[in-house]
Image 1 (tube, helix red, strand yellow):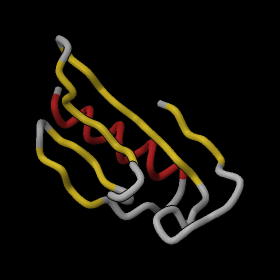
Image 2 (cartoon, one colour):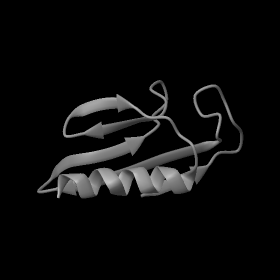
Image 3 (cartoon, helix red, strand yellow):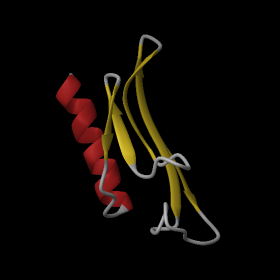
Length: 72
């Protein structure tokens, strides 16, 4: 998990954060949450990309861990 506080907000990152959370098994990304420039907030679950609605850092981490647990 990596979360950066940006110096300013913009249309893609109104929360002022850049983040990357990833769960990898045997070299394959199973779960990933990020907000890459041009894509906004989204998550990856076993190869599918899904829009994600960012609420807070605490909720981001909780949602990520819930997705990881759901694969176990």
